[in-house]
Amino acid sequence: MVDCGEGTQHQLKLHRVKSSKIDHIFISHLHGDHYLGLMGLISTFHLNSRTSPLHIFGPKGLDEIITLHLKYSHTQLKFPLHFTETSTEGKNLLLEQGNIRVFSFPLKHRIPCTGFSFEETYRQQKLIKEKIVGTGMSVAEIQSLLQGKDVVEADGKLKYVASEFTHQPVPPRRYAFCSDTVFDPTLIPYIQGVDLLYHESTFMAADKERAKLTLHSTTEEAATIAKTAKVKELLLGHYSIRYVDLYPLLWEAKAIFDATHLSEEGKTYVIK
Ligand SMILES: [Zn+2]
Ligand SMILES: [Zn+2]
Image (cartoon, rainbow, N blue to C red; front, top):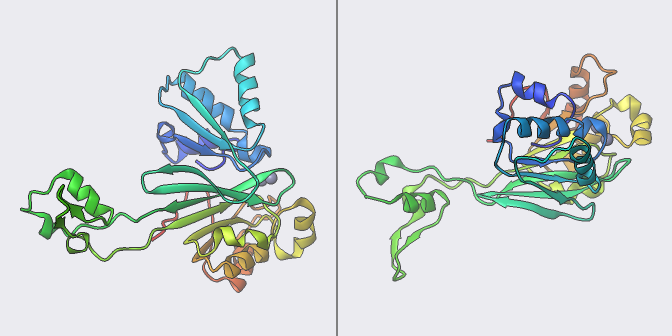
């Protein structure tokens, strides 16, 4: 889960996402709209007698906030909670699990803030089923082929060549999330060429000065970042409540970077 604003639990229920599936939570910064749902979620995990560890990644101070909540409610959590403090210096590897790596990188906002990128180290291959049938391959061997790795016997002899049993390899995918940030081209190296970029666009272009003042971005600025970084697709979000109709925001961004979408509550965006 990336950021956890107020109402997160309600949204999880509404969209039928099982909160028990959440093992890692990444918090970009300590403005309320990005983390005030966290204590509620932790409390629910506790009440539901969760036992599996929960890993939280976030800025300095977040562990203290959580500890104080637990201290004054005399709560001894029923599950291990591991906290990792994020750094606002450079790109840092936070987590490596399976074929996914998660990194943090700095964003320019009113308080310390980081973006996150989710990067596959390899893309799961698709098996050519007809070729597998009758070979007597073990599960471990199939798993190796799925990772695009040849199967080699103990004596070094090649047993199965991955390219013979799998379809054409597909490049690994990358997704970057930039929560709250002023227009800042120095973040481009961290998001260069990603398949999908979420970049806040709190304001329309006409409110550019307001964006600068509050260290947020406009639609045109988000689109300019996407275009310059040569990302494949852009997702806008974090819209100011002053805009009732969001389509004008989309059109403004599309004029600069056509592969732009509005992020909407409950919608799923698939990276092909
Ligand atoms: Zn903020
Ligand atoms: Zn915010």
